Image (cartoon, rainbow, N blue to C red):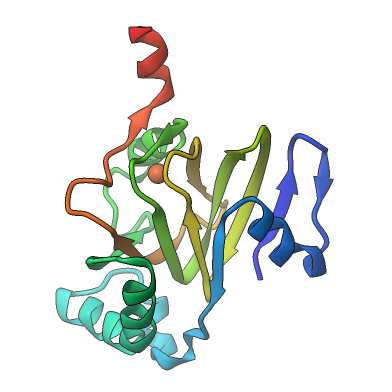
Length: 177
Ligand SMILES: [Fe+2]
């Protein structure tokens, strides 16, 4: 279960209220047990393409089901940590800029953790996701992503189109406006 802090109301959302909180805001959430993938592999800092494929294969049934239900056509695995990501801090600076996408941003956390901060219906809230959490940031939702102090995440990304997952940054929009 993720943790949620509501910035607008200065409140932590109690665990039992989180499913309804996310549903009311149109954020799709699922929990997939991660024990179908070997722990040693999930926790490895870097992964060969074969090892990445091995992790994706461990979740293939859930990926196929969700893709069918929600129209995702492709997926991959992203690995972010200081050992395998040379320019991690630079990359994070971009991730931490508020942006939108023209499709849902879907992430299933295989290992580590990350924080999505979203603004929906005027409320801004941060969702800390950990291994087993799947979250979908709805299309057109202003958001940004960052890592926790642990600086480690492995996540399956699911895509609706080949072109859709392009960040449209708010600060660029305001420069152009
Ligand atoms: Fe995004």
